Length: 128
Image 1 (cartoon, rainbow, N blue to C red):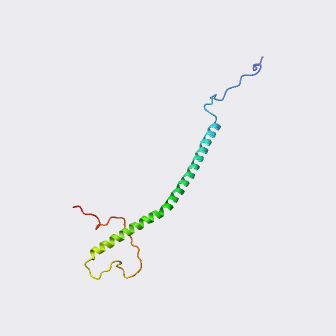
Image 2: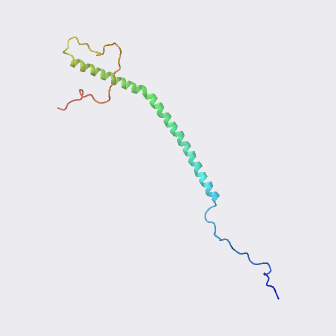
């Protein structure tokens, strides 16, 4: 009896895996691309923070340099309002004998008047 033996050199290997070709780049290339984009984004973000800090510093200095101008404008407005009040008082109390112009308070203390920003009803011109 003759035994059935494998051929000389053996049988061909059995293909048990799927032979799917690789598509696209290697994952390491994708990872390197994502890391590069993130690094660039963080760099630009840090630059924008520096620029925003510089703009904030410039705004603070601009406001500091404008304070004397704004105080001068406020003082001019206060003087204008005090003169207008004195004129109104002179017009109202012109008939009263013994009336002295000035403060209605019973002290010599200087009291800084506080005014609102709206127009005065008495000063507004009436339509004719």
